[in-house]
Length: 116
Image (cartoon, rainbow, N blue to C red; front, side, top):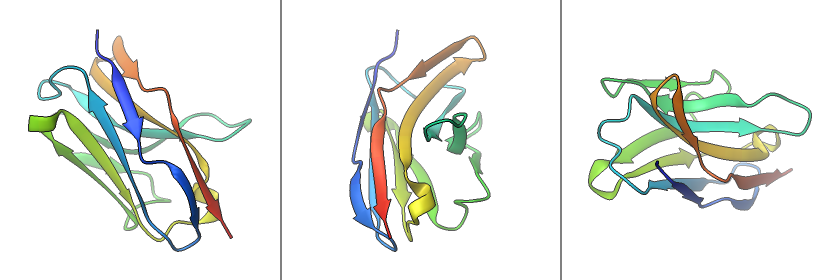
């Protein structure tokens, strides 16, 4: 069992920056995938950014060039640096970690609100 604890959400003005952190209770080195989704009321959860096996990264088109995902294996932590934030980035952001398609862990979610 892996527990994920997120931090770093909050309220920011449009154009501002936030950094989210997700710390796992165990090693993330062997995770097949790890990253961030987000969800707004009435919509499906969508992938924001993630690492796949081999440390390749994926980004949603809407955040590419503004958000950067990184990891510190020694700290079992994944980060999401969010720059040039827009009101449409407002959502609950969820960290995930996956050892495979049938073993996926989720954090509790952290609210990000971007005011115009």
